[in-house]
Image (cartoon, rainbow, N blue to C red; front, side):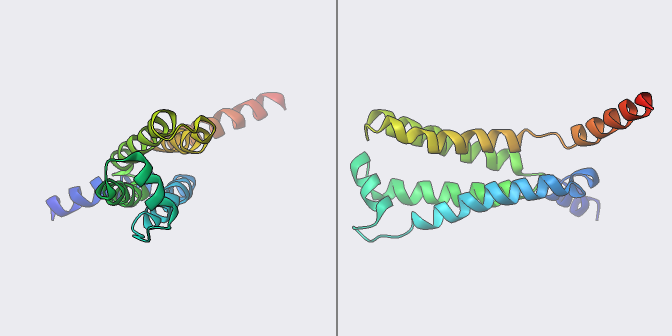
Length: 148
């Protein structure tokens, strides 16, 4: 039972993390977005957007599928507090790769804002500390009490 409880805590986080509604919403939004993005990468239609993008990259279509698997897995891991940082590292790596591909191979530097914004969102949500929410609320209450 102890091993099972520890495994559960490793996935869904500590009791404080499980009660963090804002964290769940942020992780669900970002992780869910990556899950949806990844599903498009499994479309093997030669006229599809991701097929053509990865054809321009020139490594092969296996790279499109691999990227989709990494983003799907990372998105799933990102949903849970205990695995969020592992998933975040996977998702961040794909966004760094997307930025690099846009700057070097695809030659479209304006488009880097999309993976750049996603990278920032992943990092901010993955490194978010839920204890700061209660700390900020406590400081605001103290400040309001002093003002009376």
